[in-house]
Amino acid sequence: MDIASSPTSSTSTDVDVAVVGAGFAGLYLLHRLRGQGLSVRVFEAGSGVGGTWFWNRYPGARCDIESVDYQYSFDDDLIRDWQWSERYPRQEELLAYLNHVADRFELRRDISLNTRVTASIFDDVAQTWTVTTDQNERISARFVILATGCLTAARTPDFDGLDDFAGQWYHTARWPDGGVDFTGKRVGIIGTGSSGIQSIPVIADQAEALTVFQRTANYSVPAGNHVLSDSERKDGADGFDARRRMQKESFLGMSVPMVEAAAADMPSEERDAILEERWQMGGLPMYGAFADVLTDESSNNAAKEFFAKKIRAKVDDPDVAERLIPKGYPFGGKRICVDTNYFETFNRDNVTLVDVNESPIERITANGIKAGDTEYELDAIVFATGFDAFTGALSAIDIRGRNGQALTEKWQDGPRNLLGLAMSGFPNMFLITGPGSPSVFSNMVVSIEQHSDWIADAIAHMQDTDARIIEATDTAEDEWVAHVNEVADSTLLPQANSWYNGANVPGKPRIFMAYLGGVGDYRLHCDEVARAGYKGFALT
Ligand code: FAD
Image (cartoon, rainbow, N blue to C red; front, side, top):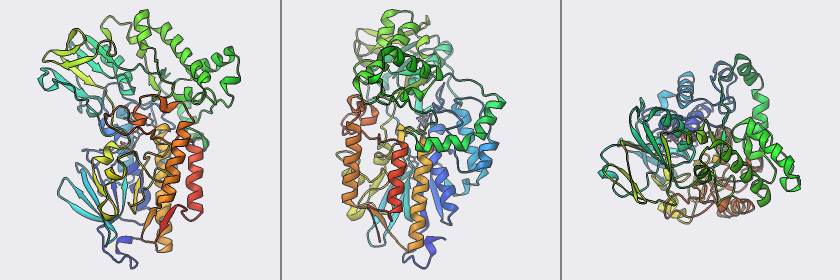
């Protein structure tokens, strides 16, 4: 049913639903909502679909959830037909998958590319949203869904002198299409988070010299990546449903079970054996090494010591190894990275590590980077400096709810919402994987599908009951925010300076933004709210 032109609709609107963003979330939302007879328009700032996988084209960019799990579940034929080449596919392949989905489900006709939404203003009288774009278009919509991504607003820190630099500079999240040839070049890279850790080994292979500027050493687990055999692919497709069921009930949306025992109760040999087993599995299963690894200091310390041993074994120069060992924050407090030959790269003659805690970056010069007493001469600088996570893409849009209240004003002390899905004062507006939901602390495709389905079901419920408005209540919102904070505070994670809590953006309120209750428990909360007739939401 087209709500925009339905008899129950007292105001005419251009579309039922405006969706901002055409990544994993926006594409699925379009397909799902169309399927329930709604008119949908998707706006995408990029010149192509794919979101994260459209923008992040840096060397070595891959997902770090296994391909079989990092894909949509909504269409059995799609699961069977699409053949992943590797355990952890490269950006190109992920982008090809999302383009395939856009073509296969004929999504493109309702997507406006190269179109940035600049404002979304609620009209209190008409009870509709007016969405404005940088293409001077203005449309009205009953619902707005912000599928703008949590890791979208790239951050280039404000270094003095960047304009003076005579070479080229790049941000990993805005990498030029067609790539960059670093052959024979002296390259500096700032940042050793996930993007840095993925790109450093690949750039080191090509460049004449690579200087790595590190502020914080990170926990990184070898990926154990490999080309998938035909039988692995077949097993992946045959076992997909069972895996996805498990992911939905799990803590992180992954299909490797967590160890249910607490490390605090184990002899140290048993702890080490479990950690070694997880290390050999490769990648993020390390998060599930012990039931208490994120909550108990001694358990967390066991993981820290294990990483320190591994890094010392991999890195030849003991001084360099010490600098690469994460210190001063809990394991898991920053997103764990997944790498291929990261630590080994520091054994190469053409790679230098600069610890900016000892030698702070003073400025960028015409010739390179001045850190401490040294000017490092460079032909190119790569900023692997991450994102204004969770809220950056949202605060870039002028979003105003009831009585003209700006979202940035509502969130001035940190994000507030119900279930990470909706805000009081912002009727008929939804977030996808927003702050207050498991979001980046999960396999995000699982979370994206769950959010999209929940929203689509809520709108279907409104269609069935002739409701015009759905809006989170203040009380329910307050309770959810308190719960999110309480769960976060029961873990060690808020102790780290991380983009999880806004610590990487000067002046950003310090709030742990992901919900740490786990994907399974979170889903139960959402389902319970829906079953109880959207408890905590006012439907009018
Ligand atoms: P995105 O893919 O970020 O898409 C949002 C889109 O919205 C963007 O294309 C953006 O241009 C658009 N947009 C934003 N604002 C506006 C506006 N105002 N107007 C118009 N368009 C707008 N997650 C995992 O679970 N596993 C992984 O292995 C993993 N690896 C990652 C690796 C990298 C390098 C990064 C950056 C993220 C990774 N993530 C991973 C997280 C990843 O972002 C999600 O998995 C997923 O791709 C998010 O999809 P999305 O549609 O919600 O958002």
